[in-house]
Length: 407
Image (cartoon, rainbow, N blue to C red; front, side, top):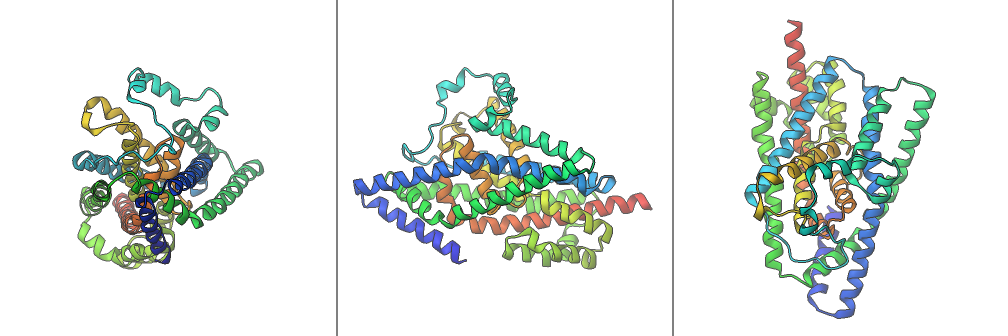
């Protein structure tokens, strides 16, 4: 709560400084905003690569068989559904554009530059022919492909000293990265002041409020639809009563809402699933820890909606000319969002920072995320509750499937 108040205060201070219209002050704020943009870009590549590799690499130690297979299937289905709901709602609500955010941000490709690029060319550019090049260019799509391949490859290797050394090395690098991220987060109020001042110096508050308001409506609306409509439909399809399941799992869902941490809620989720919902201990103790790691419905929706919003501000696409030709673009980012969400485990500030890394990697205007940050706490609360509810649904469905087979 204290951190949230500081962020909100920084946002207000930055807005006031920008409205003063002092030339030298605007230059200072632009300089600070540029520094933070470059720092975000610096951490973007290792954040994405290490998060995805270390998460998928642990699959091998989770075991295999029917329980894991069904857990992974339901996790991917619900996560894809959450992202798809967010994308559909984004098109319907159509958040308006923010005005130009200044020259300190990376300049995205212009529309004219994109027109000559076919989807096959774009797909070929994702497939790397040099293992170093994607890192040097910050090619997010190529990096995700490499990280996914390396992570799955590590999970399939038989346990050995060599595998343990590689995994420990990657885990150590990730711990070091987390330390750097925590340092950056600690100084973020200064960055928020700069981003806010930069924005308010050029735009009216009314335009910003309308655009950000529609964005928040899409994010929270998508979470509500996933929570009360989509996940209950999954339960109904497996012959389960969603009202009964939610009533039994309510202690865990409420704790997730207030703690904003699926991991911290895990002991309560497991006990509630076993004692109140009647899930087999074998299922609950296997499925729920995995789901806490990889089942990120709310995160997938947040990454997709926020990425679309930020890219729209950078002119990378426009809903005004929306037609079926843009569907591959939406499907590509839906896939990126799901893979990123699955690989999100353990990253401080969760999907917010991962989204920021993705946007930095493609040169999108990350200053928009500086404006979103103060309201992220509320979004994070709802997302975490949805994630734990989704974990509960997956556990209930796996338990139902196994109990039917045993009969």
